[in-house]
Image (cartoon, rainbow, N blue to C red; front, top):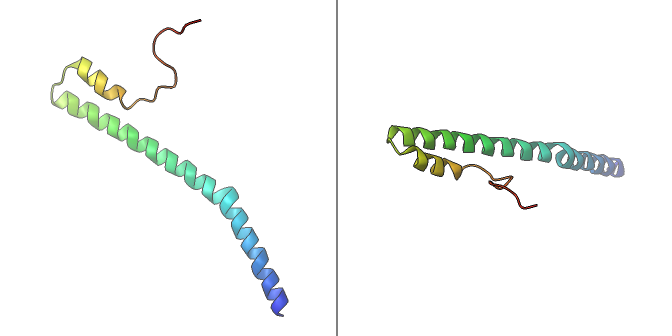
Amino acid sequence: SVASGLGTAFVSTIYGLALANLVLLPAAHRIRARVAEAFEIQELIMEGTMCVFDRIHPALVRQRLRCFLREEHPAGPTAA
């Protein structure tokens, strides 16, 4: 009686750990990354809008908005 209850509790714990680590935690990380990206986009839009509203020179606007972009490839020619 007690042994079968412990066995059931152990198996359900293993299933819970597997579900959390294989499904729920990776899904939470993906959702968190998407929310962070959406927040960065909204921040970029707000900064650009405020620059236009404040009549800031376009070169300065470009410089401010470049701070929001991630550089995956460096700008300019590459040395071969």
